[in-house]
Image 1: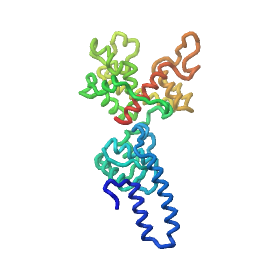
Image 2: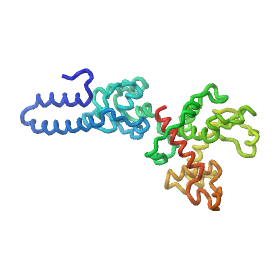
Image 3: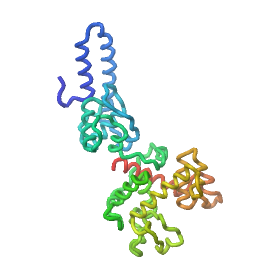
Image 4: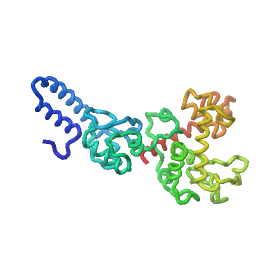
Length: 325
């Protein structure tokens, strides 16, 4: 008899042995073979008990999942996330049995999704966050580095943004990410790189304007905070302007259409990494900058620039953050 705390793998084993007891002698060899396979799988699952990857790592693989008697490594990820996000209390055994199925349905009900026990795109998105159309590829971030923003910025992102109807910096990043399908990590990386996420927003005090991301601030009027336009009057205007810029930049780089500044990046359409490095170099204006001591050009020679490399690290930190926030 199984205890209330039975795991999904134990339930699978119990059901299997019930079938065997009810089977005839002709099926004995078949059930003996299946018992060994199942016990091998249980042993495999037990080696993974309580071994949870970070939520960020678990969310990188989002296959379609449903109740099954077979071991699946992706179910380990799912069980870990359900335990973390919803205190599901599941034993992490890699089996999508009735207990995991019930936990999935409880989460779907909580999220106002169709309650069917099937873990598809919508369920994964509520567990892990949406997949954004405009985002550097997974290869942009090294798998050997543990990325995370400093506590200074994980505190700062929860503070109220300037002239933005009470929204926090995190609210602005997520709202505009959803509106423009731009990864919120891009938007927060811009905030950090341009103004230390509002901590050095020098035009607020002097001119009651925002230079949070630098969007809409050409050098001709940026020095004395003299620029005008809706994008510079609030932090929310800054983030919206940047999200729109990132989206347009990526579309220009991918299609090569039009005469925008980012069309030149279509030369590197064979590599998402290079497209994004090019976009960032053009964004900062140093696509054609000279390298000190070597009169080559940043992007032409090395296919990168200092700003792109610094921005990449910042983006990867915030990508990890938004995977769980």
